[in-house]
Length: 301
Image (tube, rainbow, N blue to C red; front, side, top):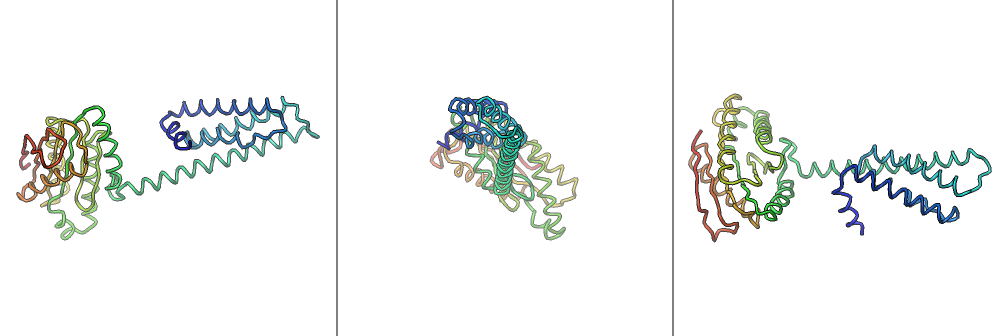
């Protein structure tokens, strides 16, 4: 039940969440009014407020708190519940507003902290890109979507040649600067739908959804030029990049196998001792039993 509720509200827009919370609050108030003041409905007024704070925003939660307290007060006035003093009604409404607002604040803060922890667990703290865990989370969604709509994808491994020499000769601070710069370049060169990650050390991974061989060639040729320009501008002598990419006409069933094939191509470039890119197209998404049908080499730049 709770899983269904979470799935239902998680995909709704903020406007839709707000509208549904208002309708639910009105439903609770109407039921409270019809059943009379002897039956308590206090806990049910918290449900719309909680939905607004968790699936909407902190501000929406506060707004629903005000709406809930006002609605509850109207229900009490129209139900004929007696009070010894008129200010008691206002006092009770103020207490309810404070309680609703506190719940809204706590839920919104809890959601913020959980999201922050999730981001820390899936983000590389040096470059700001996804880490290995974050990559597989996003890549699974991208591959599943590509399989559903029969779209192709490209997967690439990028390794920095000569990075150890930067650390040894120029210091680790300069090495970190190089990683940040290249990570930022990868982020800027990519679309919002692309999945870019640092796998650790000087290795990066790129997943390009809805990309064919022509698109992959254009992307990686431009990327190599941009990488070399940044390296030259910063004076990182000896630093280069080896890129191995595999283009799948249909989404592969196993992202690990796709990465393995891209990694093998990257090592072919690395073993040649040159900066460059190898791109291969695989017409079948299956593993090693099917050979790539086309190999393209983008030479040293």
